[in-house]
Image (cartoon, rainbow, N blue to C red; front, side):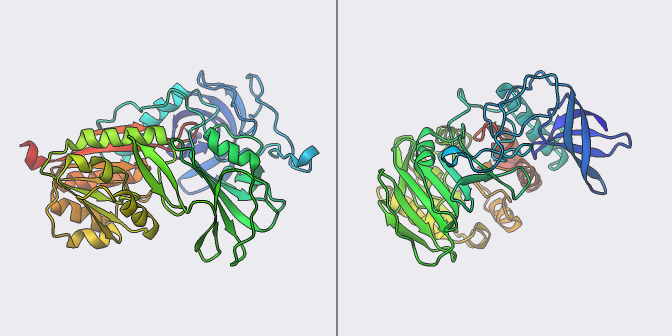
Length: 440
């Protein structure tokens, strides 16, 4: 069918409507394009289609930098670099299968300024449709001056022959990787030097402290017994057994990264933002939105290794961090050894927050993609902090939770998208909420 695509969606696809008005999602297409598409999946209220031909390309369409990105359909554009068919090659080199692209990046075919514009529009659309905010105060997305070489943490699947692979988009097919332009150079060094025996490992994670230069390779294995490992480079290696136990094999049992000059210990199982440069921007926004006072008690929900709470601790009287991960809270305690006004409570936010006895003046939350549990939101509203900064990696759950907060007596002052994930459809957003009674 012929389609005119009208918008980009949260899942990264372009959206149009067929002759009946049914919504059709098309990956690797761009809003504003006229295309020929073939339906590959039909649901009651929508369909998904494969991009067959670009009839009228968007001015934002560019040639992807990476040869592993999905090959384009027929179009009047210059061809992208040709992928290599999967199979044995000289020196064991691999490439993508023709017609199958790496799923790690979804937007390399879109000029970066347009990526930022689309992300702003997606956040606004989610606030309008899910949160019922027709005119949400969403600012333009903050981007990177160089939107490449940023990921400090990359996870690979391991092929039967030991090659490091990504999944193809919406598929379990493995794409053998020769190069990757969103990895930080320190991660890419590890990628180039890692050689594995086939069949022993299912996944490999490469992590680095971009400011400290520390490197770690985390092997997820099929054998309960850790393997014998030999290395000839300064890299720490950890092994994760099938049961989830992590065993340090070589070097440090954690790496360190720096934000605002403070070092943060990060163990293999602990979460840390993948983009160190823009992680500092998140901290700046949270500090600006909370406007901490010396007498304040700060709640740091889903506190992780202590990123927000420890960096803001010098500005407040007391910090209470809540974190469920044993690994992350152990790191946070180690990171807080010189910060006397921080206390830690281990458990889920929805379990601990309703019973919290302390008064809370300001709060920050950085929940997982599913957003905040309703019990956690209700408990936060009952605590009535005057200002709340919500850090979200999912615009849909953010919009849902924003509606609950506003219905509970808060005003959405501002939403600031930050592009922690260039070349992908993922969007980080920081929102500022203020208690209405404070404003009146």
